[in-house]
Structures are given as structure tokens and as C-alpha cells.
Amino acid sequence: MASILAAANLIAEAFKNGHKILLCGNGGSAADCQHMAAEFVGVLRKEFPRAGLPAIALTTDTSFLTAYTNDCGFESVFEHQVKALGQANDVLIGISTSGNSVNVLRAIRAAQSIGMRTIGLTGERGELTTAAEVAICVPSSDTQHIQEAHSAIEHIICELVERSLFASE
Image (cartoon, rainbow, N blue to C red; front, side, top):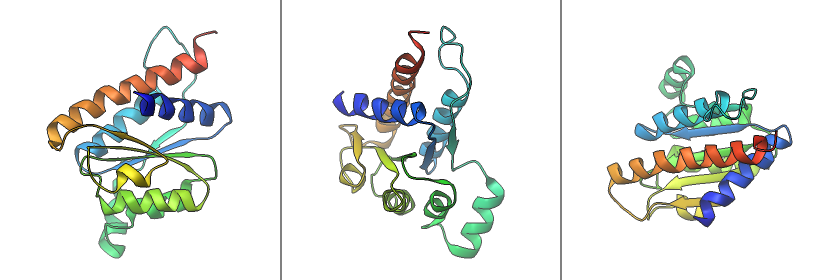
């Protein structure tokens, strides 16, 4: 629970200071990225009417994704986007159930190299458990259980961020 709170605080602080969130992952984790970005840009809880918050899922631009991976390979696709779109004090959320997705790990390292903050959502093993500044590790090695937990965690983070930023308004 402490890592979830730390992630929510890091994201809320970034939004407060005019920064954005980038998200990356593969397969079901890519869908999680899109869902989480949509909750920030949209509104999770209608009791907090607000403007959208700047969050971009790096998994949604099919023209870029297919052109880049065809020409340059899949391993650096998110890293390339982070370097193009990220700035110091933005936040990258990398999601990988195994914790070993090479393209997610390379994106985390690229983000850190330009002064971005990093959050990893993963299972109980893998390099992402130690690569990200804040690691949220689901105590399982079963992909479906990790994905189910990630969905709940993502909603909790979004709600904590909304409450932090808008509950007093």
C-alpha cells in the first residue's frame, strides 16, 4: 500500500507543477496504459468536475508504432517516444506483468536519463521491481492475477490523485 500512495503522491505533484504523465506497456498492459490515461484526461469520479489532466499512453499511435518497430525494432519503441515527448519532472509509468519487458525497461532508463520520475507496475519478479523509482509489485507470478490487480491499483491511484488535487474545491 505504501508504494501505491507514493505513486499517487508523485503523480499528483507532477500534475500540480504542470508536468505530464506518459505510460507504456505491452498487450494487456498496453490496454491498462490507455485506460489509466483516459481516467486522467477524463474524469474518474463525477464528484470532482475538472479539466483533463495531461496523460499520454505511448501505446495508442498505431502509425508511429508500426512504422518505428518495422524500421528500428520493438525494443526501443517506448524509449524513442520518451525521448521525444518527455521532459524533466514528467512521470513515466511502465507496466509489465513479468517485470522484464525490454522496451518498458529501456523506456524507464531513458526517462531517468532526462530527469523524469518513474513508476513501475509489475508482478513479484523481474527487473522492473528495482529499475523504477517507485515499484508497485503484485505478489504473484500469474499474468491474469497481476493484470486484475493492476486494474484495481490504477483506479486507486487515479482516485487518490483526484482527491489530492480536487477534493477541497
